[in-house]
Image 1 (cartoon, rainbow, N blue to C red):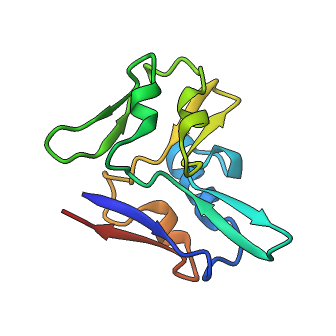
Image 2 (tube, rainbow, N blue to C red):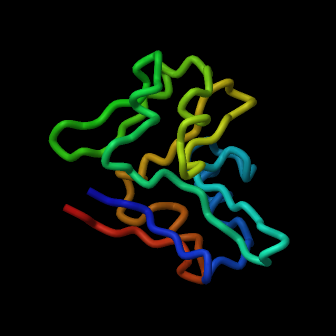
Length: 138
């Protein structure tokens, strides 16, 4: 299984990862439509990347009243069926890592799918500083 890992020490705040994700999944270059978001802490002077961390015990799955989120039994990977999402935002509210965001335009959640259909995830390919990496785990 693949996990997206981030390193805020390497992040420049350029948001290329968010744009690449949005283009890959929605066809538009709008950062708010990417599953990886960059949060700026102006006081501390750094950027923090928020993306699904594929939790071992995902609160988002337990909170999803529409069964749009589930855990794949064979791998433990968190899956998201966007067609089932009703836009209640419970998953957004309970995620401790801010790894799920609202797609206000579509009225549905946006969650990282780890770009399982690609050799290299879009966010990883777009990151010039290596602040976003893909890691294969067991």
